[in-house]
Image 1 (cartoon, rainbow, N blue to C red):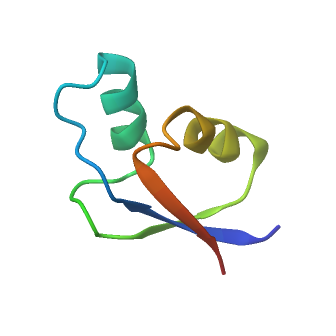
Image 2 (image 1 turned 60 degrees about the horizontal axis):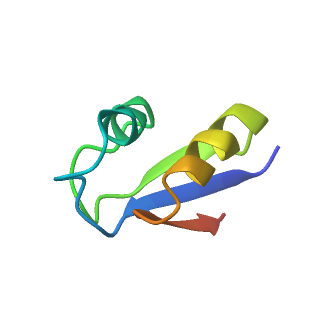
Length: 59
């Protein structure tokens, strides 16, 4: 599977709790600090739910 790099570009403050928990589940701790994951259907589904807060690049 391919890998993706996920970077938070907008704040999670004043967002629904589910979106905050999704950011934590992806391992995103700080803004502009990228994390890498395999592009599995589960990860892509999580990214889709918070696509307005993150940027995604294929590696």
